[in-house]
Image (cartoon, rainbow, N blue to C red):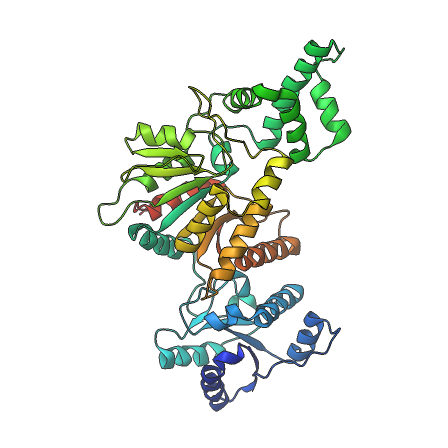
Length: 446
């Protein structure tokens, strides 16, 4: 069998041991670096080098994650397999680095715990390997699944180093309007005000017409709203936010369970939320879990209180609204946050990203400031192995369309490049169960 091995040159000593064993088993092995010249197409050159290979071994290690070249090579190999509809890739794990699932749909060989035993397994697996039939690929260890990730996160939770990062998806699940709907409601209020203040003949459907006609980005539209609602902007936003009387949801209930002090370990370190609402705090209070919302550098929290950092601003359901705190709602507010690396919210996020393991829930990874902070934390990560986690829904644009596989691969690569492991779910409704397992609860049916 012709075998190609992709690896970091820093792992060459280990790779040579693998090569010797494979050659002694009768395989032809190529493990030298592909020669590239300026202007060469990486994917085409790899295709040329791999066209005679029956199996592709990718050596997964801390060194391979540090190597941009190796990561490009892994990517090109994965795309090549997708285009041919084959499964020729077998990841070979030589240390504690996680295997990206896009490399081999849930299968890899582990040499990190017992090298010789792992080599025996690899040789045995290759003797049954047939790249033309996906189901025949036999490597015995699965790419880390949800349970594996839950166990690792539970260990982090028990050590007191877990931070939960909540995006819009957390609040939407409880009944808070999605961003577009919130803007639409506020746009309606702005049109009513313009009509009354300036005696403009604006009909009740003006908001919808305006939105269709201008198609403004949400950030620019937010600036229109902020400028014209003036001092009532926060009040109007709060009214729109809670207009459908949102309360809780299975997802928030699972966050509460995750926030309970651990009998066999330390409590959840903190929650970072990009949402304005207080739904998490209300549910924590209802469960007698001490907590404190923090939305400016002047606010602290008690030793036994769980800090909930509202890095985009805070709008409690009742009571006096915070003064002197800007909601990150419009274009200018995003610019201010992006340009000020020493703002309290940026420092809080960067501190948690560099000191803790962060689990991102309901986050889309489209916020440019958050991506910048993730990139900074990744650059500071000397191990260059993804240390954070994000839950994502598996792309399902159509039944069996290769675009789904390509989209999943691209999304995972993007997340990995920001230091995030991806935990894939068929439906978002499965996420509460995952959080419950991290907190120590058993999965349904067990």
